[in-house]
Image (cartoon, rainbow, N blue to C red):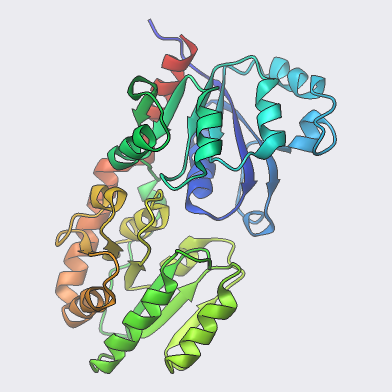
Length: 357
């Protein structure tokens, strides 16, 4: 008979608005709401996350284990573990660094590990999984990548798809006649996120004669380069940049079509948020996205490195509002059935119970 797990410490590096950390925060919030005792220990929580409502205690390395980066005073964290009677430690992401791994070595408890993508730092992935009893893959595609690239044994891997509280997202039917449609992408502004391809696709959509407004939302080091590209493409009057964001969902809610132009195989949390709001999504054909978006039913999937296909998918939805609304309703239903927070919590607790046996 498996042991129920009711006390968890989550461990992470710098907690930001990246999809993996958003998923972590929502999972911990849901575990806490269901009666589990939860605490988060991390390097730091970045300022943009500060406005989110968090019902569980959050500690930094310095608070629980002494001064960064020496981690002197590990006894302080051991006292925290004893006081909370923690049963399992759940590591989220791969950016713990030297101090984080030293921190893990001080914990005499079962460890489970959730890398956020197949492109995560392989050295960190391998280093962390050696301490883990179970490794949670966010998709079948990611599990294969972790086996092949991360060299993680198959019997250690458990597929635990992402999830969210669908009922907390208001349904916004897309492409109503009352206003100009809005198409946008929401992600950190950094290389590899696809904003450059999105802007090129916007230019093609406008050249085809369609009327729409476009949004690029996020923060990051590539902001200046992306803005320069928009100017070079003469998109200043058509593209709005939204920065200093504390909640991606606020931006996603005003969009009619959500675009994820990156080929990275991350968690896809923003795609799930858009789908939960009834938005059709246009995504790049990567393994993880193919497990979330059903092409032609809940959104449109386009090939990698094809700006023309990306533009054509956006045009198709803008030209056919009834199709966009039908896809949006199917998208919300798919999230409710396959990617609910209730399902994620149950699978996570089952994994914890297996880890502590």
